[in-house]
Image (cartoon, rainbow, N blue to C red; front, top):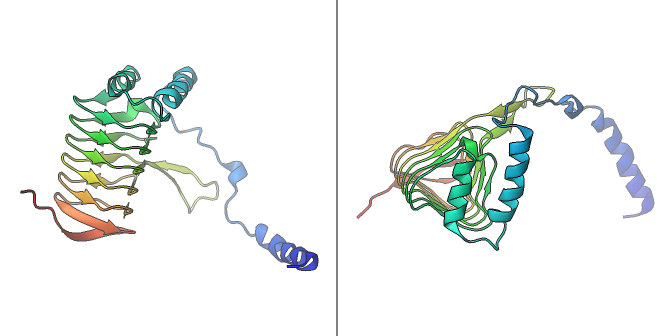
Length: 201
């Protein structure tokens, strides 16, 4: 590509910039409450970077204690692998004997409730936040996520806000869950849809 052609492409792009239907400069999440003050959030940010997001801190016991100190409800025998991110622990409830895999991200701007014996595999993303694409100011939308007992969220799956996953369901690797999943259902795809029923022997 020549210099002249680069300049031409810039000229063609400039009119389109004025046609944007959103105004991000006017965005405000002032009505959203994170649930704790700035000091608590800053302290959690530091401790999370040291004890959770770091690959050098593999100890489950201290992680469970820290989450509880910041308001999370954590059951017995919860395993938390390295590089896990939790946005706000005070909006998290985890049942007994759950596994949270490496690089999982619980982005809980709204409440996330995880049942007992749940396996959250590597790089799973629980995303409670979105934006109103009909709004010129791109308003924030937050919705909770509920994961039932015995669920398996396989590697790199994505669960969106407002979704409830029924007990013993399986979300296949790489799937995007945009709506509720029935009990013992196996879902896969983008967006995820049913491909069968789980049968435990």
